[in-house]
Length: 346
Ligand SMILES: C[S@@+](CC[C@H](N)C(=O)[O-])C[C@H]1O[C@@H](n2cnc3c(N)ncnc32)[C@H](O)[C@@H]1O
Image 1 (cartoon, protein in one colour):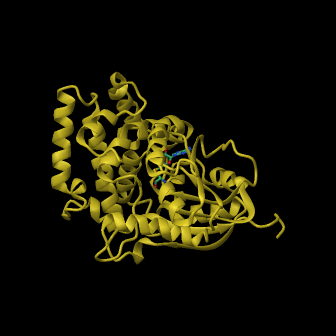
Image 2: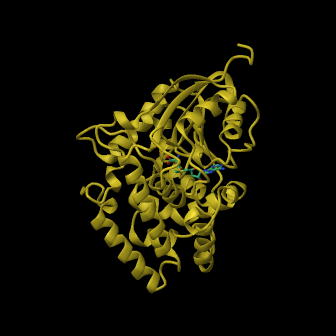
Image 3: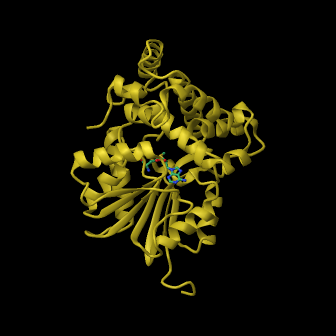
């Protein structure tokens, strides 16, 4: 069962960080970002520390508000958020043409929501790679409860240097995770290395679109709000991602930003003008309750000091994401399917 109660949220803040150290971790995390005077180079050279702090701090909030899968989704009218999230995962599995029994790698797997869904949908064995120990602990528990612990597993490692041999997997995917890589070419090269020749890699990437203007101060503010609120070193453009795939050796089969095709905007659940009973905790009323709940739990000592600050930077992220989505300068679903050639000269 997913941990979605208020006490689960409170006790989970900080993940593997000692409860007394949560506040200073928030301080250190914030200082990496432009908003607090941080620089891109600092975020890139310290990406492991920055990203791990971020996920230790936010995982219980994500699980509380969003569920087991930590990503956005293309959504049809009449579809619930939960249904759209599952369909987004099924779409990826179909594009990869997964076959029963195949060995699949999920790069940056969170607590394994997509991994469990995709493995059950396609009867494959999925390995989740993640550098965050707290998320892996949660993921193992959830795999056991879901009954997929015999076929699916987790590896704690950095996706910039994976501990697996060359040509190990029949397919690889990444959902809203490789945006954390300090260098896209380096990350895609590692994926290329562990993928079997002739097989496919598919991903949903977080990107700035062609509508993003680097000279526009408003655009830059939105970009830095998203980076701060989501633990990102520097959000790449769709073109940079495409270029990085080719530099890593992939043949790009198809690529497209799926956001403009989504009848219900992907950012709607975070939009404070929107109300929904099914995703109540994400609405402005729901967030108001969560904020006060976290404040009270922190006050009485049930949530570590610093918890409210985490809630605040997540709200900043939500503002940036909604604005970025509304202006179409940012997308969380730049999708591509890429193939590793049978030989480098193919
Ligand atoms: C937004 S979450 C998405 C999780 C998952 N794909 C999902 O959709 O539920 C990004 C994930 O990438 C992982 N991650 C970030 N940087 C990583 C790195 N260098 N190596 C391995 N995992 C990383 C984080 O720990 C987190 O689990």
